[in-house]
Image (cartoon, rainbow, N blue to C red; front, side, top):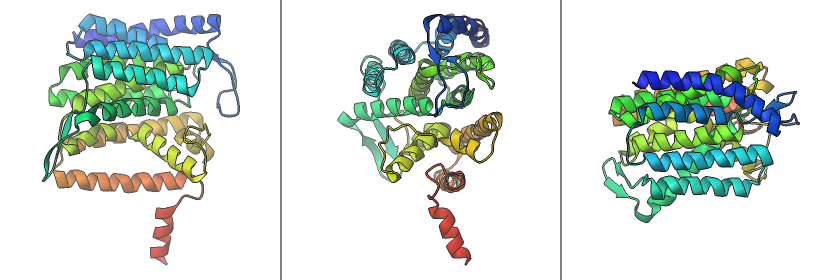
Length: 347
């Protein structure tokens, strides 16, 4: 039955996307080129409606049961509405953040999804108490916006999100969590169907309607699969979402170093850096897909490792990420502490 739901979601996305393209042009939901954009023509940008519609159709066929399901779906509908309003009216950052906060509160307070405690090695259980609600909300909003930030090249956010959802599906299946595995796989099928129209050269952008929806769902599903577990296991969703999280983290580092607001827009995200060093549009996207796949594989490997093996894997990953960031200038052209240290040692 799950395969049928996934197939229907995939086909629904293929059918709905051309209809959304026509709708976008009719209502003026288009993205116009500017100095920060890499596209050179007007593009429809509410493709997220097709992803959301396809997901709802596939989900309705299977109807996987979970105590948090209603809250998640209502929160998802709210986040799609916020994204649609932003794509249509370009609402303020404060209004968009407020909408995300409401959607997160629906999941946390109505849906009952919270990180209540973690088990620390050698120490025991650490209860978050009153902090469980703000910690959960920060996670949801953070990942939601991380996916939104990487939506800068044709097919990038859809592809990275699909890879993350596949990783979540695999991990949830290993843990025997049918709801998370089923929901993530149906959403992955919907995103993949949309990707046919969104890969370079794109016929439509997902817009905030899509990137906020995918980010919201990924944050919730990752959290639902790994809440209230050992601290080492809590790292798994962070590794899975390594591409958007690292891009967001180094964007903050870059803006702090440049004495800019952390919310300031720029043209130095991961995909911009790859284009600047000579990658073509398609090569940059495929390279980031490859990195996302490596993060997903590392998450699966991490889940099967011992505590010391997991710590070693984290250390190696951090070194590799830092070297890559410095080589492509993701945190700024002059940010090279590790490379400078290597040069000093080599002298």
